Length: 485
Image (cartoon, rainbow, N blue to C red; front, top):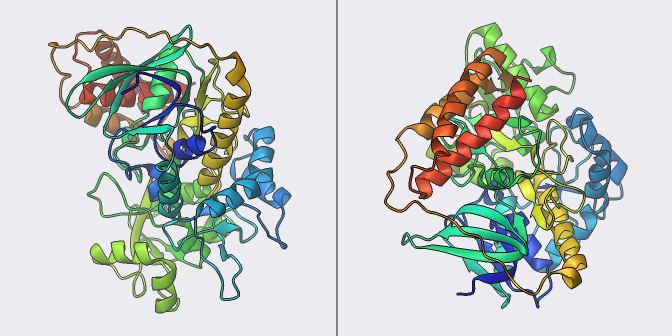
C-alpha cells in the first residue's frame, strides 16, 4: 500500500465520494472509511435533494429566500447564492452518473414539498433518496483506478506538515500506519452520537471536527444543532428512526397527547413550518400538556399511495407495530443535523491551507441557524465539487515530496475508563436539547472539560474507544462553551 497520496479524503458519504469523482484521474486519491462502506448519514437521508432544475414554476430566488427564512437570516448570503445557483449543475451531473429520481406518468420528475419550501422542488427516490444517491456515487468511484478505498480504518489523528498533512490510521487488525498527502478533505459527517438520542448512524461522532480543531482550524457555530421534530418515539433506541419531513409535506397532521392538532397555536404555517419552529412548538406544547406523547397522523390519505410514496418508512413502522396507513404514529424531537462545523470559505477550504471540509462537518454558512429540509445533500454535492475544483487550481504549486509527521499510539498504556461517552451524552441531552438550559450547560461544561483534560494527558492507548470518546467530549466542550456565551 502506498503511504503518499495527492489527496486524502476522510469519509465516504455523498460529500467525500462526489469530491473524488470531480478530481482529475491522474491524481492518487485515498478515501478512508471508518466502518463498512454503506454506514454513513448520507445513506439515511429520506426526503430528497432540493434544487431548481428544469423547473418552470420555480426559480433560484424562491429557493434562496426559503433557505434564508428557515435559517433565521443568519446564513452566509454568498454561499446560499452559490448553493441555489449551482444546484442544477450538480443535479444534472448525478443524473448523468445514474441516479434515478421518481418521475410522473408523463416522464417529468416528481417533486415533493417539505417544511419551509414555497414550491415543490424536492427530487426524491421514494423515501430512500440518500441511499440512491450515495450508492450510485460509490459505484462510480469504485470504477476509478486512481482511487483507493480503505474500509474499517480508524483515522486516529491528523497533523499538518511542511508539504501538506499526515493521517494516523488503525485498521481492524490493530495495525497502525501513517499516510501523507498534499491536500486533505474532511468529509466525516455529523455529531449525532454526542446526544443520547439521534437519527444519525454510529459513525457520527465529530471526528473530523476534532481533528481540525486540534490542528488549529477555526470551528464556527457548533451550537447550531438541528433537532428534527418527527423522529419515531419508541423511548428505547439510541438511534431513532426518522419519519421524513416529506410525510408532513404530503399532508400529515401533528397531534398532542389528546390526539388534537396544535400547530395553529404556534405558527401560521402549521405542520409545514421549518424544523426548528415545529420542534420548539412540540416542546412548548409538551410543557403545556405535561406530556411527551405526540403523534404524526396521515392515515386519512389513500393507503396505496402512502405505501408507494413511503415504502421504507411504512415497512420500518410496521416492524415497530404501527401501520402508517391506519393510525397515528408516536413521534418526538431528536438530534438530527449540525449547521455549524469546520469553518470554510466558498471553495470549502478551511482556515488552514490545503485542508478542506465538506458536508455536515463543515460550516459553509448556507444553513444559518436552521437547515431548510433537503438542502443537506445539495450542500454536500455543490461544495465538495468546489473543493475539488479548488484543489485542481493549486496542483501546479503543490510540492513534489512528502513529509511524514510522527504519532504515538501509546502502545501498552491503559484503556480509557468506561462510561465517558455515556456521561457526556447525558450532559448534552440535559443541557442543550431544543431549548438550551444555560445553567445546566455551565455545570456540564465543568465536567466535560475535566474529562477532556484527562483524555489529553497522554496516559491512554490510542484505540477506537479513545478516538471516539475524545471526539465526542471535544465536540461537547466546544458546543457548551458557545451555549453559555
